[in-house]
Every structure is written in structure tokens, then in C-alpha cells.
Length: 338
Image (cartoon, rainbow, N blue to C red):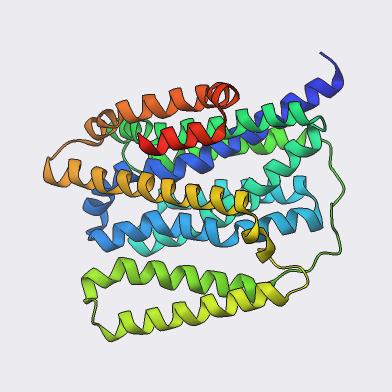
């Protein structure tokens, strides 16, 4: 094995390992909702915040995480994000009430937003050849897809054996192994040290996403005609307007709006939005239904997701071959048809 090949494998192993725990935490927590509810006495809206605090922070800060990697170096920001994710996972496992758990989930999302874009930068740097890079990114993305699908089953087993706190504590040693692997990767120079942070756009995105999600979560409990819901809708609309105006004028926008005029980018983004909306919503609702309405254990709930888990895993391994044989458009249309 040549030194370059060894370096490439170290990068791919480190980034894939961290991506697994990041994506695992978007789905694994769903089977713990009933156990968390019994521990803290929370209702459905509280459980939704446990799920969404992580994904909301992750989504809000993802683009800025990439910018920080450009400015200060991908390895440095990646290691910080992975260490922060490990710390936040430990805090989740040690939480004594629901607000502490939600706060720790926010910190988890921050760590994930730093390390995920920087992991792609590390892969791009390690694999300069286009075909090699495509294969490495395929492995990286495939590991994430398997982790997302396997989350309910893995969570069910862990909760059955060790309780719900174990689904967070298991992240700590895995993340620390990732930090150790990252420390063995040579440092790379920042790609764009002079890039400016889009602070206004970032805060506008956080407010817009947070208030939009808050309205959807709390609307059913407060009533859709509540003055708080109207206020949330108003704030969300203002924040979205500020975000798009800022992105159209900023020198280094976190989301260059010209990307949206690219039909390939817009189409892929829309497809990702629709599939994630259905997939993650399905996990949450069925987990609550299986455990509260049917009285199933977390393990039974995880096993109920096994057919879905198996098919997503199969799809992750066969998608590349099918795309080469029939084209991306045919595979996407067939997938959405199914």
C-alpha cells in the first residue's frame, strides 16, 4: 500500500465514521420518544423539539460550517466539530430534564454542521482524481444512508438493553476514535482565508427556520388562531425576506442565489426536500404510534422498521449500478414512483 493510498483510506475511514454517527442521530432518537416521555413527563410537542432541535441547528448552520472550513482549514474545523459532537452526546446522555436534553441536542447539531461539510472537503483534497473522488463520496454517502435506515433498529436494541441514554453515550467513543483518526491526517491550507462570514444571512436563516418549525410544532397545541401563532408566522416571513435580500447583496453569501437558477441544483434540492420530509416524518409518527397506541417496546418498534431498513441498505449499494445502467433520471422517477 502506497503512502498516498494509506492517507486516502485514513481520510475515508475518519469521515465515514463521523458521518455515520451524525446521520444516525437524525433517526435513532425516534424509537426513544416514549422512553424519554416517561422519564421527563413530556408531551408530543416536547418530543418533537428533542428531534427537531438537532436537525434544525444542523440545517441552519451547515453552510456556515463549510465557509469556516474554507477560511480556517477543513481539518481544524472538522476536529472541532467532532469533539463538540462527542461532548454534546455525553450531555444528552446525562440530561436531567427536557430543556437540558433539547439544549444538548442543539449543541449536537452545531457539531454536526461543522464536521459534515468539512468531511467532504477532506475527501476532495485526498482524492484529486474525479473517478476516485466519486467512488469515495459514494462510500461516504452510502454509510450515511445505511446509518439513517438502521437507526431505529440500532436504537431499539440499545434501549432494550441499556436504556434510552445509551443511544447518546454510544456516540462518545465512536466520535473520539474519529478525532484520533483525524489527528493522523496531514493538515491542509485554508481554501479561501479571505472569505467573509455572512452574519446577517446566518442569523436570518436561524430565525426563519426556527420560527417556521415552532409554528408547525406549537400550532396544534396553542390553536392555529392563536396570537402567538400569528406572531410566529409574521416573524418567519420577515426573516425569510431579510435572508433572501441579504443573500442577493452580500459579497460572500452563505447561499449564492444563482445556484437556484440552475435546474439541476434546484431539482436535486427539491427531490431531497420531499424525500427527507416523508422519510423523517414517517420515522417519528410510526415510532410514536407503535409505542403509545400499540404498546410495543423500543426493540419491537426497531424490528418493525426492519423491512424499511433492509430496502434502504439494498438501495444504497445498488443505486450507483442502476444509475450507470439506466441513467439518474430513470432511477429517480422509479424511486419516487415506488
